[in-house]
Image (tube, rainbow, N blue to C red):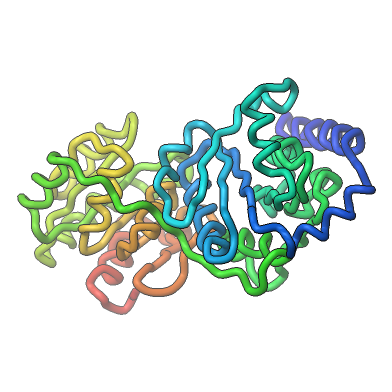
Length: 346
């Protein structure tokens, strides 16, 4: 009940703000859609996976436009050095309500440009809509036609009816600018360190197993990963179990219950390098899943109580497995092992 009240109040405040900032005469800025050579993508979420899900938009625009990306300060490290990106900029939430030289600089950058609010196409999110509008004060603002934010967009894009896939829907936001926008997840060439080089040298044929994730309720039980490590060893692969902040004990439990080696602490680039060198990456539906896909690794992603059709990545070499209906960890592990071995589950 409390959550519903919070959602209701957020929408009420959102509509009030949207009405206060609504400027119907801005519709004339639609002329910039085809004329502008600069596009400023705005995605101010602080999650790694969300940042990576913005990279197909850069790919779709890079050959025809000068592409800039505005992100949460915590995500700048994720997108630094991304191919095709002309500029990477950060946005502080406090700039919504007070002026700053940094905001003024972003507004100057976006003058005469198209600003794309690359926010959720499913549910209303006020901060990115307001951020895009503030940045695009002198440009044309494009974004999803969701809730109150549609009033803040000069061009509100309705979602595609034929798919729920996140990448497809986010690319669709570019349809007013380019015909048939297409792109895939991307990442810079990982910066390999001596620690990663040593691990690669010690285990020339290995798989990355990443049992963690930001939200516990979306994780497949650790026992599944432990059982999968045994199947990997049977195929001649060394399971390298990677982990994020606060997850080292989880990684050690997986190895203790199965087999393999626990990876040392890894930076984002080190994790990307390990994934890129692995025969296969097995992980939950988390930020590391998107990173694995972005570096081109063969990815087997395990989904638990989350829609595969929305968050998954279809097509070879990737496999997305919905394990929600499986009765126990052994049944889950069997499905994963079949996929890894190229058997019936593949």
